[in-house]
Image (cartoon, one colour):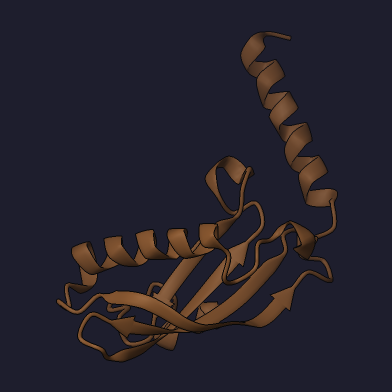
Length: 134
């Protein structure tokens, strides 16, 4: 086999092996871990500066808790659903929903985080009222 075909074959075997493994929540960080909160901060900062432009970004997250854990059944990747109360720079409270998904990061090597602030998703990327992250 030539190199590109061999690399594609190896990648296909890796993907097949990964999808055949059961989902495990043990590889997911907790809702309040430092890495997760850093990713949420980065996501919300980018969304505020490029899309929302409310002038009142979320500065802190409080009352962080898990709302749902999906690690059973035919699902290939474990998912941890979390929610928190965000405090904006002007002191307003906003509900923040986020999802931590195993192998959802860069090239599937790490976990991925998606976040949504209730009422600040003008393009409905996460559905009405952040429904896909609840």
